[in-house]
Length: 314
Image 1 (tube, one colour):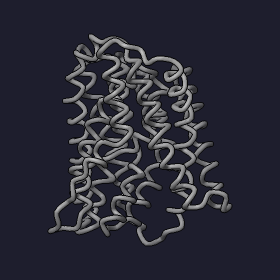
Image 2 (cartoon, helix red, strand yellow; image 1 turned 60 degrees about the vertical axis):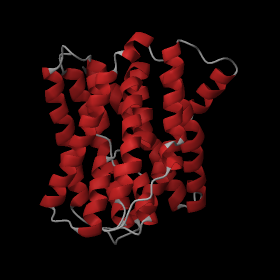
Image 3 (cartoon, one colour; image 1 turned 180 degrees about the horizontal axis):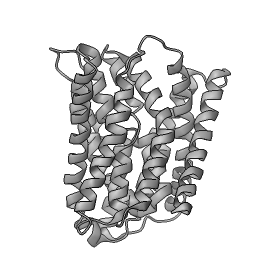
């Protein structure tokens, strides 16, 4: 129990240090907005897809993948639960209009790309990456359909884009699962190159998060209690509710799978939402403030959650 707690603290400390480096770089003018955009583009188009592909292609067994269809149901259920908590917190905070729509998005979509994938990989390895991969496929489908629709002003039609939906991370996940289902290992030197690029995903992603949060902290237009409600409902109550369900389903699922889904539910808000909101003329300042608050609070809530998971009798 103590070893698990200190392991989580060590991992969180590494994450916070990388976020701090990014924030310091932005504050001191080393990382400008243009550099952060380039860093984000490289991480989302190269490093993160390589990490996801390596993890998916190295899935334990073809039989396990074929029997993993219940994880799709669980993934959609987790997304629905987070959306429901978003509606509840928006009602309690009396949000309306543009801000309510953005609030629903930052509540329903967690930062699986920049924080979730590196964290699940570090904590649970390839076994934990299977539910993470299936969840991100479902989440991407929801983000670029329902998420974009929510971020459009009321009364307008959301433009559907196959290019956004079939992004590099989703394609990498599908390709990796294809290799695993066929029982084929990626050839060399392709495999080692992809693994090497994926190894740097955590560092690039978290430096980007730190730089983005440093710029968001300067914007005072969106100070609100809404993001703190997201911390309470999405990052605390939602994972605890999932844990209660996991205890009831302990015979159906293994501990690492249940733990991975609880951690996924407790992730801070997705950093992509401010960009989507800005494109559609909604309250991007509120979305940035939500990303700032939830990411800072995650430094406390995520280690506490993973420590709690280590106490459960799976």
